[in-house]
View: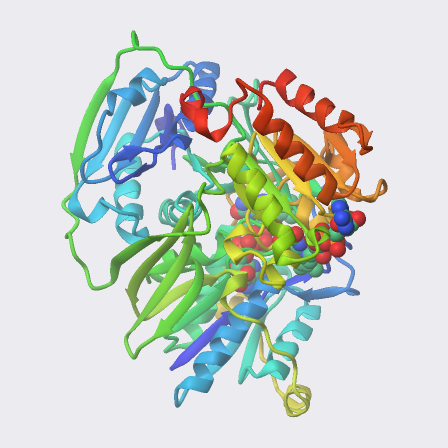
Length: 262
Length: 345
Ligand SMILES: Cc1cc2nc3c(=O)[nH]c(=O)nc-3n(C[C@H](O)[C@H](O)[C@H](O)COP(=O)(O)OP(=O)(O)OC[C@H]3O[C@@H](n4cnc5c(N)ncnc54)[C@H](O)[C@@H]3O)c2cc1C
Ligand SMILES: Cc1cc2nc3c(=O)[nH]c(=O)nc-3n(C[C@H](O)[C@H](O)[C@H](O)COP(=O)(O)OP(=O)(O)OC[C@H]3O[C@@H](n4cnc5c(N)ncnc54)[C@H](O)[C@@H]3O)c2cc1C
């Protein structure tokens, strides 16, 4: 069984800047991390690998060359290898174009039975890439998965939905997006780090995927970011100090009644 | 793609067990506004086997309802839903197609957009029409709520977006409205081995579903222990509210993962969010800062949560909460759980 884990490199959360003119994210190579939910996706793949024979886990990422670090980290944690999609043609891709590239890479790897993604990435936060890859590949998808059981030709999943959980069975090959509750990600091991250092990770460009530059990057993206601005974060806050008179609580109840809430 | 051939606004309604989900009425409000600005019709697509009272959708602002029916569509399965919607959109050609950013909308809309090779904007909190170009302006928070981005889909149709639940009020109900209801049956095979729905299991720890709650009471590490966190649950019960938690609380096992609010948990936007003993780190704020009203209770006057709060009490949760609950219990006529009929729409 071959499992592809999709790994996005994202800025560590306190360290993001946007170019206000172009709306393009300015990434510094410092402080980039693997998208946290992708570590859960990787851990789930490794868990399956531990429980079955003949499982190969491959980490796939699209991003700048510095994203090689994310793939090496995945290898250090136990992945068998990976591939990086990188090059000018991919820059500025929206989720449709990103999914097109990643789907082509999965097809090129061949014989992938299971694709695992995070439910969403912490920067773009659309959660759209996974399902769009599934649509492009023509395979079933399940999202928000917190439990996964693999059999030879199918997976049973439990999704976290509004007010409860849904249990669904889908045939393989399939794509699954996971939420944090699914497992506790592991850590790089010493032998893993050694393997990662020596691992040869191919870098594929548009040509390798058989895609034309028209289908990728900004050109292949139907959406356009037209404006970036800061949200109005702070509100005017009425602050009261708790004392023993019950005044603060009374003020709160008055405030809520005025707003017609409670 | 000749974009001139696409006219009208379509929203995707949602149902559960044949009942229309209230988020549908929020979409109809948004959709009506956009349709009026463009001077076009508003339609609502809804998938399911049997759905009661589709005229309600007309009363809430739609000119047309497309009920795509069939046993395969009774419960949500991504494949059958997406196939039906791709076909419907190809037949009806709306210029705008929006859905709720629920677990259903966020799953099926990417499939539909990929199928139609058009753009999709996620989790919008604001939708508007560009006066000159007459196209959709889609505004959404990203990067943990640190920025807002306005996005458009200039060259392809429909322009697609998911909209954050509770970011708009439900549409006003008007029984004098009339419209057309049509049923479509695309004959998708009822049981397929590819995707099979097995069961829905309600979460016993969510007396009130977090996504649907008007009020959420959320607790953080400031509650000290699992027992301390029970105060939050108690206040929630009193208010008929959902229970939320910070990540630290979930990691400590005081609440289960579906209760986690924030960057790696749920994004919510209730009428009232009460944060107790939560410091307000950006990752938590990412999941709740679009709430209509925010109340914070924290011992530390410098806590970041106060920066997003409309009302704050600086004090010990173990004093404030019992006092608040006492006052609520003694206040006649307040809308507590026992008297929640007047909460009904
Ligand atoms: C502010 C802002 C707003 C944006 N809004 C939109 C929008 O509304 N619609 C739109 O189409 N595009 C949008 N984009 C572009 C979008 O962020 C990119 O297309 C990006 O490649 C996908 O990002 P995501 O963070 O949304 O990923 P998500 O779809 O949230 O990621 C889910 C999972 O997919 C996998 N994955 C995603 N990207 C990669 C990758 N590069 N390599 C490997 N695996 C990956 C990972 O497993 C990840 O956990 C926006 C970008 C910015 C900066
Ligand atoms: C990638 C990533 C994703 C994350 N995702 C999330 C997420 O989804 N959700 C989330 O919540 N966090 C998330 N976090 C964690 C986040 O950064 C914080 O660590 C977390 O929110 C802190 O939880 P807390 O406020 O309960 O605890 P603390 O930060 O420890 O705050 C406790 C607060 O309680 C107050 N307090 C103490 N005693 C009392 C008392 N007796 N009465 C009243 N107040 C009291 C203190 O003043 C303090 O402000 C994420 C972090 C990362 C790096």
